[in-house]
Amino acid sequence: MESVSLLHREGLKHVLEIDLFHLGGSAALLGILLHTTIFRTSFPVEKHMYNLLGLYAATILSLSYAYLSLTELSPLQGLGRVSLIAISFNTGLISSMSIYRLFFHRLHHFPGPFGAKLTRFYDASLAAKNVQYNVEIRKLHEQYGDFVRTGPREISILRKSALPLIYGPQTECRKSTWYDQLYTDTRKVCMNLSRDSDDHRRRRKAWDRAFSIKSIGIYEPRVRAQADKLISQIEANIGKPLDVTAWSMFFSFDIMGDVGFGKDFGNLSSGREHPAIKAVHDHMLLIGVVSHVPWLLNLLGRIPGAAAGYRSFFRWCADQIEAKRKSWDSGSYPQDIISWILKAFIDNDVSAPPSELALHDDSRVVVVAGSDTTAISLANTIYYLAKHPGVLTKLQAQLDEVMRGGPEDWTYDKAKRVTYTDDIINESLRLRPAVMTGGYRVTPSRGLQVDEVFIPGDVNVCVPPQLIHTDERYYKAPNGFIPERWGERKVEMGTDEAPYYPFSMGAYGCVGKNLAMLSLRIAVSRLAQRYNITFAPGETGETFIHGAQDAFITVLPPLQVVFQPR
Image (cartoon, rainbow, N blue to C red; front, side, top):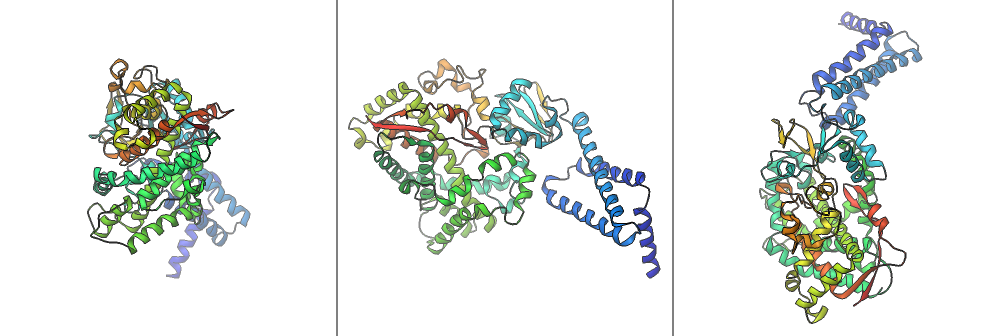
């Protein structure tokens, strides 16, 4: 045995001490072989990136140890050879990937920036420019047309016909690896991040019960109560500038705290952002950039302490779940969203989250996904009402006609009869959707035919909502704020045929759309009925519009407005 071991050591020593030319060439060849035999197959590289990098690091350390312990080379010479192996291997791997992506990849004929064809880091670099990826993707489409290659296997599409094919109820596309940014295991993530269509469909049933007509009816008085708090704060600051970006956020997060968990955050009462929410918002811009390289975000998330900034938010959500468990009454009708999810979990229902981790991830989504989108939409709508006083006056006249007794005569049933409120909200959502650049889907293996263009299989595709919503081919006066296009001028302006999906669509459409619209209708109608809304002195709204940042969810600058009693 000793002789065999000695023979192996001598053989390894011989390999380690071969001439530098052959050493570097062999390492480069290994890099090329890794790409051509494994990475180009169906092997899920992004899913195993953490393990692959760990294996790479272990190999470098093992080689370093081998050179120091088995050869007669000096430590400097040994480490120099390890560096040569690493550099040669990386060069071979990257060169093979680059040549393939530029000249032989199934997307090589699609137009796009040179850097985008090579790496997703190019897309991330665009996103990092003022964190306004929505601006950058618009420039790319203006330069390259309706089909732009934005990554090695990513295509951004600006065609109405692509919407039902990619996002519609009958689509064969599935969610992309963008949704693997936290975990690659479906059993550990919230429903929204589940890439398994069957798993998503099962779990959606519990969420649909939480947002049923009956449940929305239970939530409505609580939304009104939060609107009362908002109005009380406005009354206390009549004639003074108020940042509606902040107050819209306070309003929407308190709604989701109450409706989601039965306990609001106290934002409206205190006039300050709850620390748990601030922890989320403080990291949004970074995540908005890094998420363009999904495996990198997943990798960073595994670093011990990386999620420390979110600890207070995670703790708040976990505390609410534990409080629900302690007071659980299996015979009572759930009164909030998380109770429906928890009920499914406790009852082992088919729609239940598959693990404790998934349950807690669902609880966090209740807050974030349901709050930021409504807050953004409300702030944008208030901006347009201040910018277009004629629209505000028209809305006020219609509200007055239905509720002749003034604010004391306001009810939600009466407010719903004023469809112009919805027209205003829809127009605001068209121009400024909360998600401006959308989520990627993966084409089926047989590919996808979009008009005259064939998209190969296993390609990430998306249709940027804000771009398609403001495309002059589909909307007349696309950049104008014209609420009437959704009502009295619908036929004239061809709105029914135009693409519109601020809440996404199909199986992955926003489950909370009805609650969001309820909250927006209540807030917009009550504020318009009571107040004239104008920009504060020195405020033009230009920074609010042009300074908005795209962190997947829009991040709005402050907007100072004045509310004056009518």
